[in-house]
Length: 116
Image 1 (tube, rainbow, N blue to C red):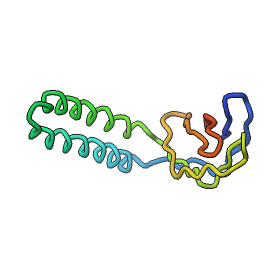
Image 2 (cartoon, helix red, strand yellow):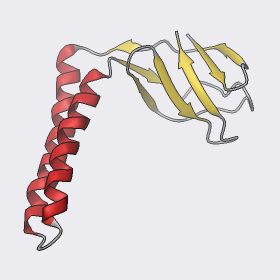
Image 3 (spheres, rainbow, N blue to C red):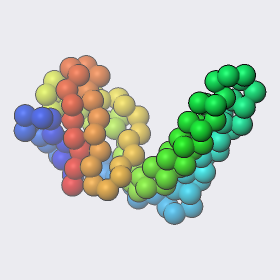
Image 4 (tube, rainbow, N blue to C red):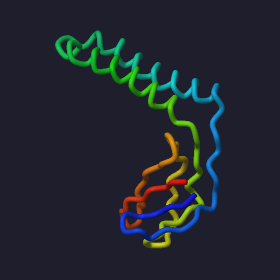
């Protein structure tokens, strides 16, 4: 796997992505769904805004639950360095959907793409 910026500077990654188990993906999806569903139920008690907030959070609960479930791989970005400024990304965990992960270097604000 390589990490590259918009202008083509790239290098190989130190860490390799870890494939998430099916039950771990389901847990992450239900957690995202449940949190937004809870917000939808709590927003019922807000007098006028509940006409907007309840449908919004119900939509977000389904959307984010499916989006979290579709993320199949996890990549530790703490040890990785930016190809532009050569400083540590220090971004924690990145979750990949398909074979691409997009992130930003906090030091130089370069947009980075991690791909196979």
